[in-house]
Image 1: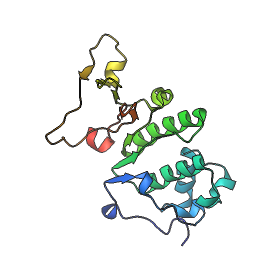
Image 2: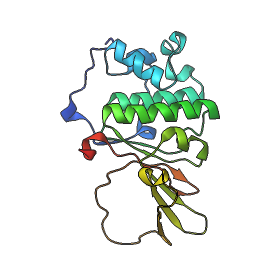
Image 3: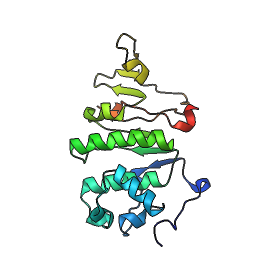
Length: 194
């Protein structure tokens, strides 16, 4: 099938999608996304795969960093409520990582997809502009800073000396990324912020 003929039905989509669980297939990138060609091109570009020669390659022909960005695009093309990515941008050079982080934030705002992004790379925090930043320190302390607090350094951040060990968690409003073994950034999905 060609691009655009694989339009997904929202009722069949997974609410949470881990990009590490995606099968990449053997088709060229532009035909692998279940979107019309123009939307596929825009999404691939947002994920750092905007060059025509890349869109015409198969996943097997990509570098590790390109394959990671394709996984991100493939996951987003399925329009999940939540997208989970461990080691977010770890395989990318740091300039490209910042660009992808910036675009992920824009995509989250535009599509309403929530992101749980785990990474040890602090350099993307400013570009990701997470709504909640959770940092697990090596000493076991957990710091939580909401983006409205990060603009005012005098506001007190929430801290927890150790992670909770029992009980049930509330449905998360955010998305995050992990640093030093803990989540450090979170963005709510648009569907949950209204």
